[in-house]
Length: 118
Image (tube, rainbow, N blue to C red; front, side):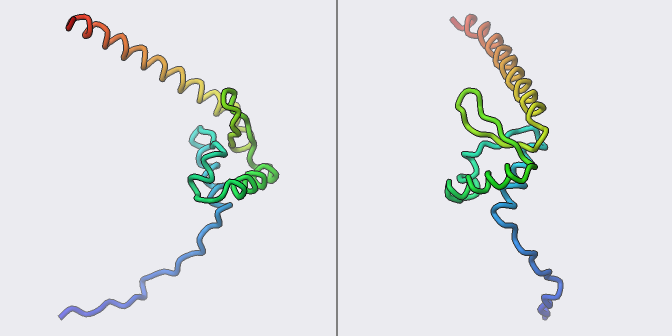
């Protein structure tokens, strides 16, 4: 018959990260991938109050490892790692430019087929 296995192989869980540490890692990961983190997404993503999110943002900014910028259209605050603001802005411009070019190419491809059907 089958014997029960002992639970010796189970490892103890390491203490889970605090919300502040999770937010810090999230903002750092986004920065490394070339994206800003909007402050408004933090309460939604981590299921915390808006006041708590702003206190965490304040701690991150005062630590000096992160900096903020405001969106030129909406005025919303965005976070990134210190020194990456301009590189991320440049990446955003390139992504917008590429997206615009792709949408133009697609619209040109659709127009001849629409005219043929008419």
